[in-house]
Amino acid sequence: MTEVEWQFDALDVRPVERWLHELPSRAGQIAPELGAVTVEALPEVDQQDHYLDTADWRIGRAGYALRTRADGNAEHATLKALDPGGAKNEPRRRREFSEAIAGSGLEWLAHGGPVGARVSAIIGRHPLVPVLEVRTHRRPFELRFDGDPAAELALDDTTIALGSDQPPARLRRVEVEVRAPWEHHLRPLVEDLRRTCVLWPAKLSKYEAGLLAKGEPIRHDVDLGPTAITPDSTIGELANAVIRRHLGALLAKEPGARLGEDPEELHDMRVATRRLRAAFALFSDLLPAQFAVLRGELAWLADALGTVRDLDVQIAELESARHWVDGLAGIAKEGAPVDHLIRLLEAERDRARQTLLRTLDSDRYERLTTGLSALAQSGAARRFDRAHAPSLAVLPDLVTARHRSAVKAARLARRSGAPSDFHRLRIRCKRLRYALEPAVDLYGLPAQQFVRKLASLQDQLGHLQDATVAIARLFTLASEGHDHLPPETIFTMGALAERYQLRADQALQRLPRRTKVLQGARWRVLADLMGRQRPGSSGVAG
Image 1: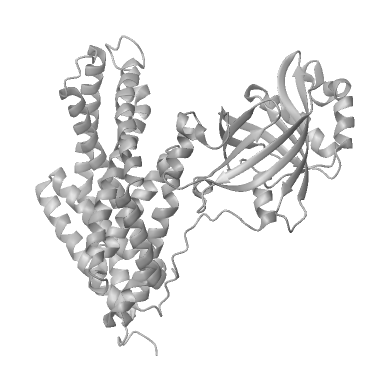
Image 2: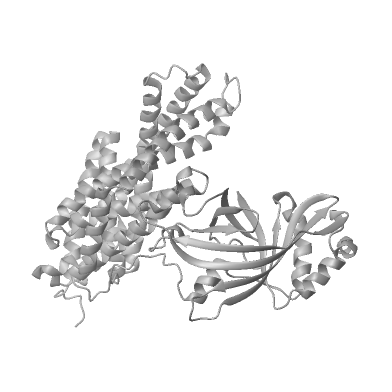
C-alpha cells in the first residue's frame, strides 16, 4: 500500500474545528466539482505507539519505521517508509504494510505476515529493542463527496516520552489522509485549510520528530574511521580510506538488500562487494595476509548477491518487453506468455532470495563482516613501512598496470570479436575504474572525466553481457523439462532469445570502435597529470 497524506503542524486546532464546521457550506466556492460535501465526526481514540528497531538501526537504514499500535480495540504492527514524499505543500507518499497482532512479545514476527516477514528479513539475527513511545489522542473526521468517502482528517494531540529525566515533547498535528482517486480533487480544500487555519507543512514524521527530540537520529552510515583522501595522503591512508568507504557502503546497503523492496539496494551492496575485492587486489602489497582469505569470502558473498541481481535484471527486461511481445503475430492471449515467464523467474528469484537471506544470517557472514570491520577500523595498511609512501608516488603505477591490462584485453577482443573476450575486457575495465575512483580525490577533473568515459564503455559492455546471460537463462528454462510450458510461451521465449541475440550482435559491431577510449585524449591528459604530480617530478612545485 501507498499512504498519501498531508501533515501539518498547528499551534491551535480550534481554527480547524471552525473550518470543518463551515466546510459543507463553503466547499462549493472552494472546489465546485466536488459536489455535496459532508463532514462526519468519528469516535475519538487514544493510540499508544511503540517504535522498535535494532541497536544498529537496521530498519531505519532500510528506509522504514516499525511501530506497534494499540488503540483500545486492536493491536497492529505497521512498517512505514521514512521517505518524506513531495515538496512543500505536497502530500507525503509512503509505502506502508500492516498486520493485526495479538499476545505479548514479538511472536508475530514468526507468523510470516506482511510486516513480520519483512522485518524478519531485515533484522536477521539481531534483536529488536524499544526506540520510542508515542501517545496520541486522535479526533478523526470523515470527508464525503456526494456520499463517497474521500478522506479522513485527524486532529492529533501527541505526547512523546523522552525518558524519566526529561519532560515529554508535545505535538499538535492536522493530518489529511486521502484515498487515491480523490487526491487531485482534494488539493483545493487542503490548500484552503492550510491558508485559512495558518498551518505549516510538517517536515518530520512523529517518529522522526521524537528521535530528534531525544537526540538519537537514525545513523544511515557506518563509522569505520577516516575516509578522506587528499594529495597529502600516504598510500596506506588512501588504501584504508578506500576499504572503509566500500565496506561502509556494503554494511549500509545490507538492510535494504535484505528487505528486497528496492532492487537497487541489493545492486549497490553487490557493487560495494566488488569494489572491496578490487581494493584488496590493488593494495595487496600493503595489506596483511588475511585479506587474501577475506577476498575469497567476499567472492562467496558476491555469488549469492549476483544470483538475485541477475534475476532482477531479467525480470525488469521482460517487463519492458511487454509491448513488443504483444505485437507478435500468433500470440493467443496478450500478455500471457510474458506473465508466465515472469512468474517462472520470480519463483526462481524467491528461491535465490531465501538462499541470500540464509547467507546473510550465517555465522560465516557474521565472521566476515566482523573481521572486515575490525581490520578497517584499525587501519590494516599502516602495519607496513611501504604504506607510508606518498600516494601521488605509488598510485600512478597501480593505475597504469591496470590500464595496460585493459588495453591488452581490448586488443584481444577487437581481434577475436568473441563475446567471452569482451566479457573479460569488461572485468578489466571494472578493475581499472575501481582503481581510478580514489584518483578523483587526487587529480580532480581529468580523473573524473576519464572515469566517466570508462563507465560509459563499461555500460556498453554490460549490455552485451546482459543479453548473453538472458539468452542462457531462456535456454535453461526451455531445457529443464518444464512440460507445463504452453506453446505461446515457448514461441515467445524463442522470439525473445532472437531479440537478445540481435542486441548482442549490434553491441559487438559498436564495441571495437568504443574501446579506443582506453587510449584516447582523456587518458593521455590524466597520465600526463599523474606523471607531473609525482613527487620529484620537475612538474611538481615545491
